[in-house]
Figure 1 (cartoon, one colour):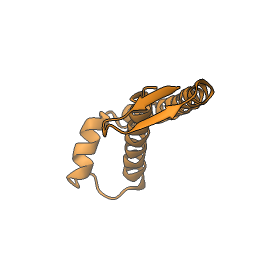
Figure 2 (spheres, helix red, strand yellow):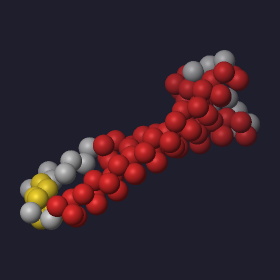
Figure 3 (cartoon, rainbow, N blue to C red):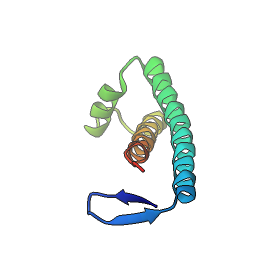
Length: 98
């Protein structure tokens, strides 16, 4: 039997088969999230190349309202938000130890 401990000192008791299944599932999820992260990273690079500005500078200007309401800015903002969302999920999955 394997015991997993979390930060709250709660324990889960798992047999080897269950542990193997969870590890496999986490590995699959990590791969899927990496694919999504790469998709959004490439999209951000496209915006940067097209508009000749870094995403960091874009976000700063966008949040200050300096760019106006053009659809392209909202698409870039969405891509940035999606990238960070996927990255956050990936960080959680990578942080799980069994």
